Image (cartoon, rainbow over all chains, first blue to last red):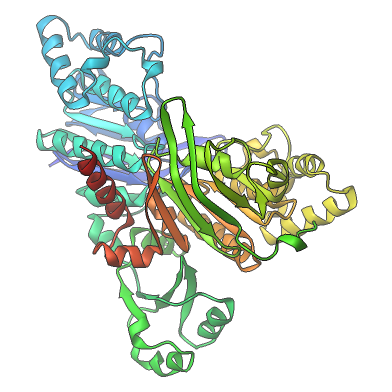
Length: 304
Length: 253
């Protein structure tokens, strides 16, 4: 059942079309990722979805309510974590939480219960009196998430919550998101990092303000047209050129080896003879699963 | 640049390099060897000691112990020579947003004491090689991130350093740009430059020829990404990294 529906959103900044007829549907209880590089339109999309920015055209509904007309009813069910750390640096951890709670009318025992529950996940209890500016990056991020959750939202929208955060903190942060999902919270999260998407139910590729594709993560990558092999051999420019000169093969250096690309419906067999003349045996050439990045690049270069 | 006396040997060679800050050991006896022509990924979580190590390698911070040479210069005694022979590029810093690309490069050229005629040739050459085109004449602050990055790379290699230090060079960039950027780095490596990449993004690390993983001031693993994944039985560097760190934490606890 769709919980958030964006229908044909467009938004210009001057001549720049930041959102181009973008539609999106996130189901109730789903963890959905908006995946794209810097400047792709992720933040514009999220600002429109949180009604911080009006679209030029198109509409948004959350829980069946129109965002423009029923915002007062949507506000209590919507939590938003912006990309920039936007808490009050001079206030303590607890003061920031009290402030956000006050804005949403969460007071008294209800506030204290929620606060304690959030401390359990964030482990920020011992730092309740510490000024927000004196927290580490990972702790700031947890405080920002706590503030976004203080009013028990049913839908959480996060704009690049893990940018600049190290792999371990990122992994912990995603585990928190999975916990929230298990409590029935619907989550839309934007990220520039392909590897984060594997944990989502579904994801959309966004680039140039347009949606390039949308599917479950495994299906997104598997839609890659063609096949990829890893050649475990020193990638000298001579060898790269020799492989490229074999009709039908494309190759590129990748780390300490090379990637070999085959067109759809082609197979490695017809090339093995030519490759063995370059000293490459079939044991050096292993198929690898196309990554989300491989598919993203393919879509950017030839959108279908 | 006269590098003839430093052409043999390693780009980076450090042995038991250590740095204390008071009672805290930020870098704890690390040893590394990086050759010219290599792309080396220097990985670690925040606070692992990467930045401290890099600052020592760039001649910006004196070690507390151990030995090291960068571009053939001793990191204790020849820090000034090291600074002249390395290039450094970070995503966060480096270009003046109110200057055009060309003005930025001219500024850096002057800072590196390049002769005006050479500088002009070099800017032309890099504009071609990095396909900067018309972007070179636009204000740097207004450039899309991918182009800003290439311009920052041009500034970092203007003086033909033999070692290039890059700090998270392609985090957040679109994947097509990222692949092109790395193909430029591969070309640089082919021409004999050692490329030293600091990052905590594992998808960037995949592009490196060899990587090391740092944790609590020590190097806990190093090797080629493909080999490491095979040894640890995982198909993702991200899993490899996290499993390694968690197992280290378990041992410490």
